Length: 615
Image 1 (cartoon, rainbow, N blue to C red):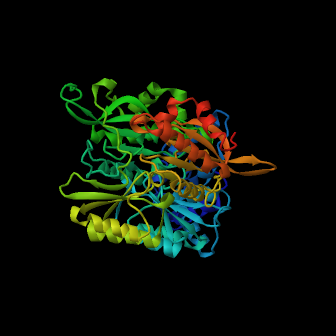
Image 2: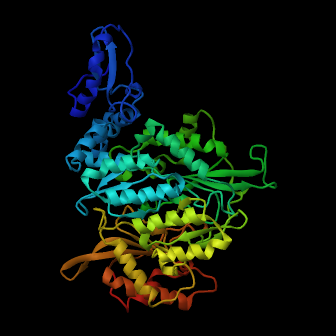
Image 3: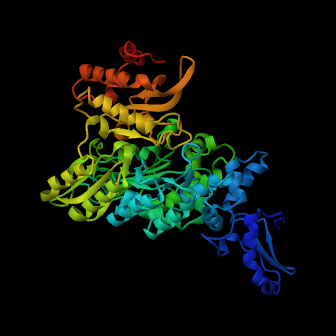
């Protein structure tokens, strides 16, 4: 039997719901414990760790620590029984269910108060991030399955940003949106407004499966092997309706790539499904001719690792069940003591792929079909320019237009303008990409010039220079306490500087990220920069670690460190000289990443060091 204990305030509030029924409960004799997952309440039951016991002495609530259905508590207890200490975040989740906080959150909003202590972390389960001290406000991360939005939803997000936030939206590297500068009094109002728009933020932050990504041109790409948007939405709804999957040890990323022209960067995800084809020549009894999904695991480029192939090949209908089983194994096995190691990569490093896949098979109750890499055909390499500009769709006389944003930010007025263009010239749909921009699909050929002009009239562009089109930057220290540099502002400065001096004829990806979390995925950029503090005389100033030669998809590579720290004041001339050297010395058809990886790092340093002082 579970032990009694002194309850927290939130748990006491939970118990009040049983007071009126206590007389009835006393008449029930000898019934078994009812798990908290079966007790009605806000967002799917009471706080974790509570159970209702009905016995001869009446109704009694216990701490539920022996409740076999409380998967989070069971996972935590494994570490406690081994004499280890839970991380502070695990303790917070053990003490209070973040999805039973709504009344507290509404009261705090009414009093114009931001969360304190553990509640700062728990609010993230609702997508609300208190980003002090950089901004005394919330940031709200949305949840948009497959980056697919209607024009009226996009307009509604812009209106909510005006009413509850800073009057702009940020596009993210997960095909998603964020609203910033939200006062304490408006956080719950914003969440309610999003639900009214059909956007459910449950689990948008904290230890959950994050926004599901898929091919941005799913269903319209003339080259894709199969549509992935239906799978992304199916996974999205599975997560929203499966309580256990909100009890992970840390965040988890899932992506579906259909083999089209715009890469989803699926290999940077914890769980990646990549479409491949089995041709007639390669077909077998187990794998007839057709399209399948290759299963890869463990991507986390901030920790310098890509998702690695498991050898498992799946039919479409098996992707969601396999994803569920992978998540459940990770739920039980993931580290609950060290947040730095609480990702799937570290379970795989510890267990090895064979042991992990065996556990997944045991979870599913059946083996996973495996195949050698030469028994299927991988998709063609992606087009690095396909997320920007005008491109034909698979539908006759239809085109999509990729819109560029300055470092992934759009004002509310611009956002509403794009919604209007989508309605006026397209189908009223918008697709967000992992490149911090969006696509306007279903444009008639006769309307292309009008669409391009209206985009320009909004102060945006559809055909940016090579620098700006490949520029990716995280929020930076203007809005994130972890960032060591003003990534957005400094990325824009660099773009303006280079565009005045260099005329590139090929795309260059330059990624600015503010901290080791690498939200802007600097390790896969042609040139990647991670914010750090650099000594300048007696002062410490904003600067960057610089890596070169990163890549993705068929050109997968982790960038090599060119410099461990360069003051930002030296960055612009350094990158200018590096790009000039590339343009002068490249071989025919050679990309910057290929060029950088063909050279020794010392050779590259010798080119730029006469220009700047770098370390």
